[in-house]
Image 1 (cartoon, rainbow, N blue to C red):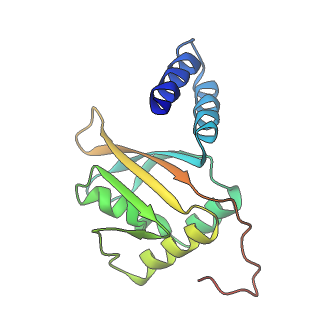
Image 2: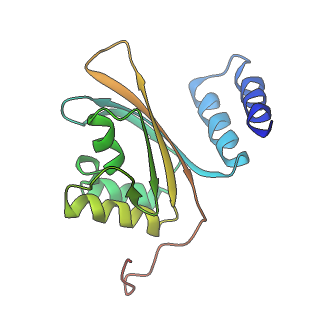
Image 3: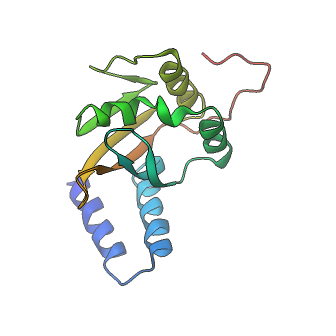
Length: 154
């Protein structure tokens, strides 16, 4: 019943004509109201895993670190989607049934967790272009500050 109430709230919030920025802010608000701590939407090229565009409500400093370290090419959620998985759940940095194929993928997962993104549910959707797919990720987890530079990520 609670899920139905969330869907009704979402429909009510998103039914009026909204600009894309207003719709994004409403979507982030709905995710937070349901207990999530971040929303990500991306369009990915199927064969390369390269994003065409993305939008995220994750912490700006984490996103800067993510892109600076080149994690986009080793993100386990994106890699899983490129292998054909339509839904993927990452819990505490690990994806059940999907082997992180590299040290970089494990580092990406570990750092996501250290930033407070404990559980991410990733859903893949078709686009009108068969060469791409859209991904929607909702993060649930506690909001914990990033470790100081003296602390080791675990």
